[in-house]
Each structure stands twice: as structure tokens, then as C-alpha cells.
Amino acid sequence: DLAGIEHVVDKLSPPLRLATSAVVIAGAVAAGFSLGSKFGGSRNAAVGGAVALGVASGAAAYALNAAAPRVASVDLHNFVAGLDDPSMLKNEDIDG
Image (cartoon, rainbow, N blue to C red):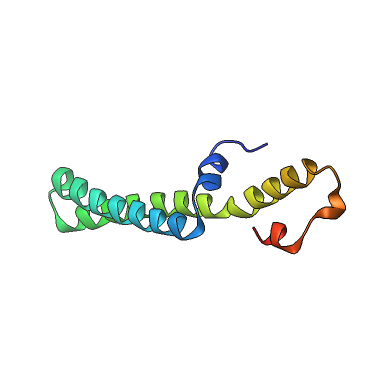
């Protein structure tokens, strides 16, 4: 069974997953810069905020992409378990 973030990974195609990760990281860096400049009042605080939120969102994006192999293996297992005759499995099914 899939758990947690794996449900999200299952719904996203690989290009969409990478694009979503890039947008989330860019948004977090911009938000961190904005928050750092608002509360810190200096350029160094703004850059620090951008780095902090950028690293945090990068870790989340990494976790999202790292879950993809497990999701693929669970999907393949569920597909094979649903077959009446597992010898009917084709290469196209595995590639899918």
C-alpha cells in the first residue's frame, strides 16, 4: 500500500513532478527572501531567509522524487497481483 506523500507521487507524471518541484523551490526562495527582508531589515537577512526556505523546500522536493521508485514497485506489484495468470505479464506492462 502507498502511504503519505507516495499518493501524490503516484498521481504525478515524471515531467510534472519535476516541474512542480522547481516551482515549489522557486516560490520558497522568493518567499524566504521577502520574509527575510521584511523581518530582518537587511539584505543579508533576506538572503538568509531565501537560503533557509530554499533548502527546506529542496529537501521536500528530494523526498518527493525519492519516493518514485517505491511507488513504481508498489504499482507493478499490485498489477501483477491482480492478474489471473502472472505469466501473461509483458514488457510493456513493466515499462508502464
